[in-house]
Length: 397
Image (cartoon, rainbow, N blue to C red; front, top):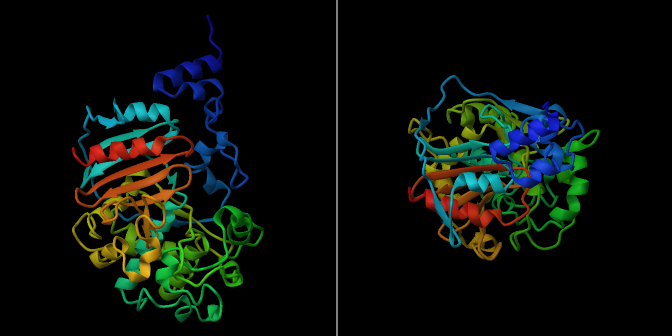
């Protein structure tokens, strides 16, 4: 009996363990080969798998960050019987992957990869989109600028480096308050991105500098309250482009990406002038995301032991002073803190994390130097508590 294409593909998905809903209603576009959209931020879920693994590079302006000739090696020795407890149930990472729309999952400690899987026909050579995990990449570059004396103080106002922002809200805000999302601007993430994104990234003539300079409505004094938004990191990006005299991508190549031993180029969305929209849009292979996590886990040291970003900057990102009071653990959310564009699951700063829209995560445990990278295409459902249970178990391997 000759099977239809749909039946063959459905059988193939059953073998690979995709959940029932993916086999029946084709929510993520499997029957169409995970198509890509050419319309920028296409909202339909059937385009997310393709768009989040390289498709956006066909429709959104971007810079390329080239890898070097020296690639840091991973020791591939997986733990085949890795299990963890979630609630009252013993679970495996493969069972987790079968339940949620995850494209990639990697767990590493030091230079050893203990678990690595790809789903939805994604492959290790694909660059996977990070969304707001790009903010934490921005933080690492900011630390390097401070280390090199290109920026004199974390508590300088942005206008010290951008005179054209003198007298504007973001120009008079310190780099610390910008990094902590405490600018005091009247901006609401869910409401105002509909204006901000066309003006700074997706419109006919997007211009980050124009958008930042023109956003001057204030809701409270700077340093008063955590208010997550895209304008704060965009201002930091402007500062770094000015002090380095280059794009963030060109600076990152010799300062971060190549010393890291990245195995492949990364990409970063830009406006019409080639300025990175550094709130989002950094894409890299899963193993290179793990290398970034390991850089933090090793307190700024690269795979050869040399310092890429100083340990003092990692300490800054994982501790709170009086000026950081609005973003202490428990102030941002009930069980969450924030500091210098990193999220924090513990009040002692030992669990920094990169977070991105639709389930992107790099989780880092400083005491054990364990890193978990998670890329996905949706964030609905109670996946995150189980992911944290999995990560806890990984730190005990």
